[in-house]
Length: 153
Image: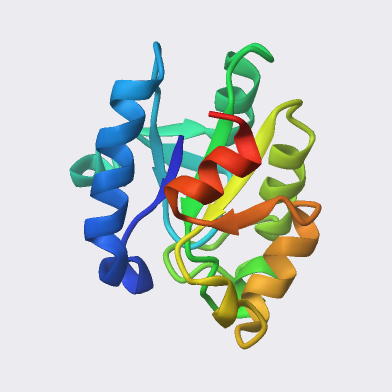
């Protein structure tokens, strides 16, 4: 599970906590990593040490075999510039655009994506449209029904 933390995700903390509790009980093995806004070249496991202990995104994606499901939890709300341009990250000077991380994630055999805003908001946020395209339209509302329908959990 890859979890977006900070910024616009703060308003979704309660829902994400509930999801996390439910997934810990549902899945036999649950691994989780954090990212901010979009999946860039690095992920982290401890948000307090996010700048000190990072993991290469490609290595994390290769680590798990196809039996594992990859679930993104985020609101896909950011400047489209962050997704499409090198150096667009608000936290560091990323050498490649974040869309490269999305493409690498999409190539993982069983990847899926979650989103916290309701479907009704998707058409009003340009970054959500961009992320939906990059993930091959594999995005759904972050609800139990959405999870069940999309990933068969």
